[in-house]
Image (cartoon, rainbow, N blue to C red; front, top):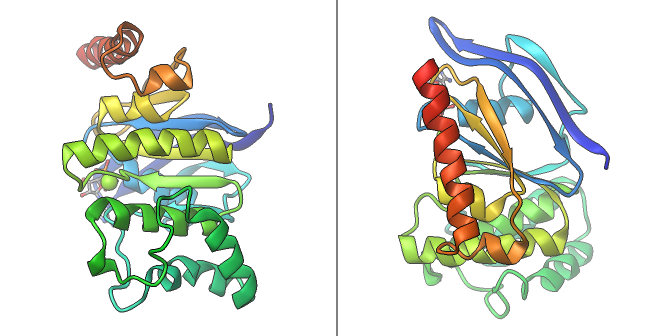
Length: 244
Ligand code: ADP
Ligand code: MG
């Protein structure tokens, strides 16, 4: 199994505010890694550093994720552009031909449940559909790595569950490498093969948990196996935070 990304000794502060402390982890090819941490601990900052949007104070990471698809937190679509125009924007910046872009996008529309909506405007779509458009844009922009910042945070719980289940399937199907950050324990279990747990700010690594769940078990939120994994995460957080 090859490594897509290796992070060592990453540290970051904004003035007097220490945000990241000695962050180390690796991402494997075709692995989905959840980074779970409380709000405000430094998750978005970590992703922005990995993407080269923010400098780190110390540490290294390699190789740089220069061809990653990024879904920023609360990402927005351009309201005056149609679905297909929103999705193709990063491909346009990469210099792909119109024909190449559109045929690639059209072949992915069914997986993303957007078939027949390519000419719609964002306001004509539901919140869940808009988020699937933003995800498809990230997938189309990136080669093999997806970086997602709290992908479903703004949605109601029913839509969020439905989209989590769907994305879990898409991750398996696309076999791409994924890093996503979340403060939601269940989302971490549903969408990942491994969970990296961060402390309160300054974020340091409390530990990580490799999921033993099959892709089917991961979306069965009430099954004993699911609850066992979820509880193991809670234990990890409670036992480590109490020693901090
Ligand atoms: P999370 O995504 O885990 O909620 P963030 O990474 O967005 O957390 O923020 C971590 C901390 O760093 C917060 O206290 C936030 O206010 C602070 N912060 C984030 N970006 C900046 C910045 N550009 N300048 C100063 N402080 C920042
Ligand atoms: Mg954030």
